[in-house]
Image 1 (cartoon, rainbow, N blue to C red):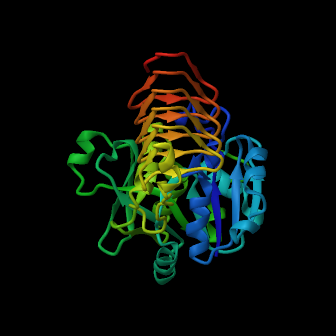
Image 2 (cartoon, rainbow, N blue to C red):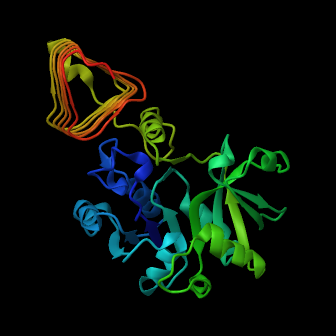
Length: 347
C-alpha cells in the first residue's frame, strides 16, 4: 500500500503564520506538521509516500528531505497549478500502482490506518472514506451512510434546516483509501474535487464505496489559528494516543527562580531569565525570555525575543518576533513572523 499527502494549499486560513512558512511544515510541538501524518503512515507499515505540492515546494522538500531519517521514502510532485484534491491525485498517477491512502495535508489524527486498510480490503471496496463526528458540521461535508457502512449521500456544508432532517453528525475527515481504478474517473490535468466530482460519480455508478468510522479517534483540521493552537494544547494534554507530550524537567532552571511546568515543551538553545513562568506552552528553538515574564497556554516560534514583565496568554508569537517590556499579548492574538511590539503595548 502507498500513500499520497495533498499538501499543495497556501494555508490562507492560517495566515499570518503561513506568510513565510508553508502550512505543511508549520511547527507543532517544534516538529514540522507533516511528520505527524508520516508517523501514522509508518506505524501502519506504509513507507512509500508521495507529497503533492504547489505552494513553496522547494522549502518543504528542503525541510523533510527524502524521508530516510523518518524511516520512509518521500517522493515529491509539484502541480503546475492548483488541480483540486482529485486532480492532484490524478497528477501523481505515474507514481501510484497500489491501493493508496490519500490524506488532506492539514489533518492531525491518531487514526490507526492499518485498521481502516483491513476494513477496505474486507469490503473489497473501490474507495473507503474515513468519517468523524463533529459538534458543528456546517463547515464540512456531511456524509450519510447505510446499515452496511455503504456511502449513500454527500451534503457539502449543510445548512441548519438540512441538519434537522438528517440523523448524523459524521463528516468527511479528509482521509481515503482508493484503488488505482479510480484514476479512470478523473480527467488528466483538469481541476477536480473528490467531494464534488469523484465521489458523486462513484455513487452514480453504484461502485463499492464504504465509510470507515471510529468515534474514539482524535481528529482536528489545523487550518485556522484557533484550531492550530488547540492542536498544541491537545498534544500537551496527551489527548492523542500516538503522541505523548515531550515533558521537560524544570529543575534545570530552579536556581534562576524560573517556573516551567512539566507540561510545557522547550526547544534547544533557549535563554530563560530569572522569575519567568512558562505554563502549558510550547517554546521554539533559540527563544529569549527576559525577567518576570509569563507565557501561558501559548506557542512561541523559534528565535523570538520577549522582554521583561511581559504576559502572553492564549496566543501565537511568530518566528523572530521582538516583544518589548511590560507588554500584554492576550487570548486569540496571532503575531506573524518578525512582528515588533513596543514597550507597554497591549494586543
